[in-house]
Image 1 (cartoon, each protein chain N blue to C red):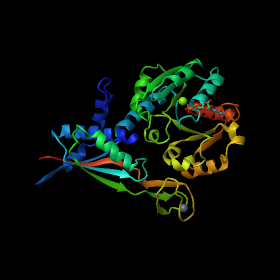
Image 2: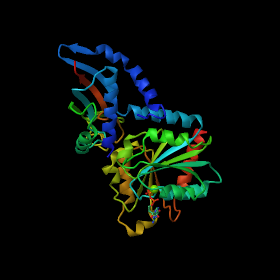
Image 3: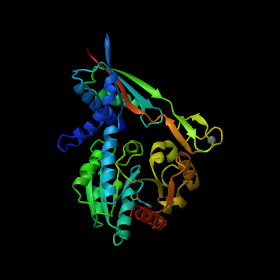
Image 4: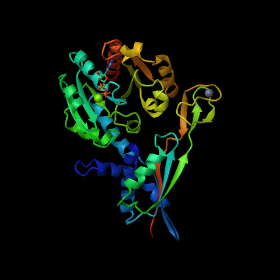
Length: 249
Length: 114
Ligand SMILES: Nc1nc2c(ncn2[C@@H]2O[C@H](COP(=O)(O)OP(=O)(O)O)[C@@H](O)[C@H]2O)c(=O)[nH]1
Ligand SMILES: [Mg+2]
Ligand SMILES: [Zn+2]
């Protein structure tokens, strides 16, 4: 997987070990040489995610993976949160973006430590990218790490980054049936933020329907409605964040 | 197109297996892909053609087992077929369910040349 850091070979070692028993069943029935592999395709990513998770836990870092369609307001949410809470909590941010460093610049302007990952054509972050980003960051103990994923509600769903919480953001300018159209993302998230509530008077978005759909996909999902622009509801999000910090302390 | 990352992971996995068994090609590959994963089969097909070029899988025959979604209702215990993650229990309508199958994404077996 990765020639420079050695993380590929190590994790290969892991699954080589755990799958040794399969080679006993290795058949040579005259013609066909069949190998029973029985291996999860995402194993490599999952092992690296576990490694990240262990690192975060060891340093008491609350890692939050932020996912949404492009433009739902992930960066806006971070800008406001970092500005409002920087006196109280210690933050760092990883910005995943296909091309530009615009979002990283916006975070940088708040005075927060930020690392940019450009995925190029890649439509999601994976645990390997996060591992390397984190290696260069010197994260503080007892801090919060936000990871803004690539704007996309499909691909990032399958890739565990090692986060503690996954927050999916939708805005009221999108369809309220987003949870039904992208069930994997809502199924794998722990928090759903409904953003841009300041625009509710102007759009046909039915908040109750959106919540109902989200809970159909994931009955345990927490839901917070807010507006990054007006600030309405932001306190609920801050309370949620602080409750997560308290529980990991 | 996360399907391309998935195909590349399959290529890595197959390459590692072939190296371990000192094989220079792979004749067949068998995959389990659950119906509740977010793998879109048209995209997967497209990604496969792109992803296997000039790899050990280039000439491999591919077999895919689609594994049906099955769940067990956490409220009443009923087992039911789950076509979508938001399907509710046909018995009691609850949305709390434990997924039993349909999330598989794995390389099941490989056939190497003699
Ligand atoms: N009206 C309104 N606009 C918002 C709100 N939050 C974000 N936006 C706007 O939505 C656009 C996309 O926001 P951005 O944070 O870049 O979204 P991202 O792609 O998810 O990071 C920007 O023009 C923001 O100013 C909000 O609460 N209300
Ligand atoms: Mg952004
Ligand atoms: Zn039931």
